[in-house]
Image 1 (cartoon, rainbow, N blue to C red):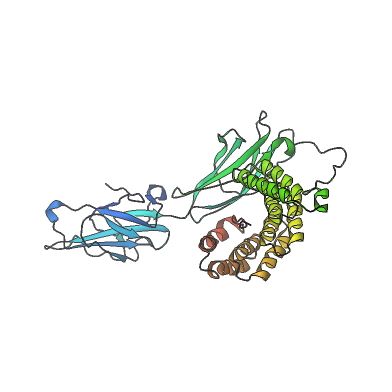
Image 2: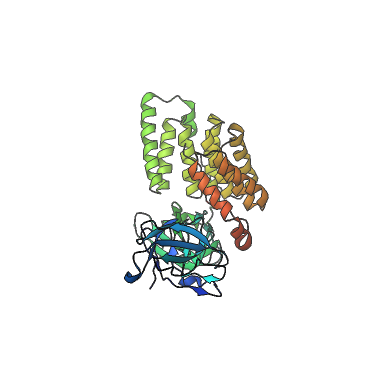
Amino acid sequence: MSALASHGGTIWALLLTVLGTAAPPDPGTVPKVRARSFDVNYAVNDAARPLTLLELWYTRDAGRTWHNAGSDRDRESPITFTATEEGLYGFFVVAANSVGVSSPAPQSGTSPQQWAFVDYTPPVVQLHPVRPGSSGPARTLLMKWTAIDAHLASRPVTLTYRVLDDGSWEGIAQALANTGRFEWRIPDDLTGRIMVRITVRDAAGNLSSAALGSTDLDGLFRPAPAAPEPAPVAVPADAARREPTELDRVRAHRLIEQARAHAARQQHALAISRLKDALTLDPTRSDALVELGRALYAVGDTNESVRAYELALAQDAGLRAARAGMALTFYGAGEYDRAVEHLQAILQQNPKDVEAWLYLGDVEFRRGDELTALEHYEKAATLDPEAREVIQQARARLDNLEMLRKKMGPLVTSAKPDET
């Protein structure tokens, strides 16, 4: 009998030697481990004790070559194994007592006694702003996403939605192939504001999710007005003509804090309202303009998002958060040259800004320049040893380039600008 699980789970390794073809098993039958380190339990007949040696061997190439993972000093189950990388492992245990050994050390062609598939990295997932689907009498919503992982499940994508303030998630589609897009026919009775979420599963069962902020279905499918509407203004014009009082500044600060709390709960429409009120009181708050740009982008209002960032940059041309927000907004709109312009402006201020290098790599990979993207990812992974989260993201991209090259083509992974 054999079983395996991560974080304290076990492998029961039978002390048998099988020489000959060591073909990898059916992936569906291989135990999955979602941790770099895990325990290997072994069973030895009581009559064979006491043991004088217990060695664990492993193979990464189906038995062609074997490596000694070390000895169990107390020779009492379990022995801890630490994987050097993700992928398929075969295991073999050699035990010895005063009489002899259970078997020779495994050689080329020795079949593993047990297999395990190690995958401890969850997928990288980004859900792009939704758009109305193809024209027709029925309302449809076009959803696009990016999901990257070296070992995705065969049909890894699940899409769900919930009505705002309702709290329960409802299914849109499940077990979808990772095509990067899905057109959803919206139920006739579904109106108002909803959130859309994507969940992606890899072969080992690691899950990653991403959700969009409020999507106003009624506004999205509202017929265009007969006459052009006046251009919306992110900041009331009359507010810029006066100097805020101390009371104005205090009230504006409170409104901005409320807006941030709403944004954290994905209540972007409320956040936008609070931020506009705050900017009416104190239009000098460039950080509020940045927050406004992010909230407007979250609800799909790209033009106003850009305007908010432009106003912030007009107050402070070196404001990194505004530059990063502009880059993300232009990327979402497919205007890659303009995204690059703002990322390069960030790097002119700080050539070691690893997040900017990471996002530049994303843009170049989307544009098909894989070599340049690779160079940018390497910089993101090496320029600042303290930026652990960015290093992890850059390494995930580098590790998945081969899979992307073969199966998916150039795609951009998820990336969010840092906080103000």
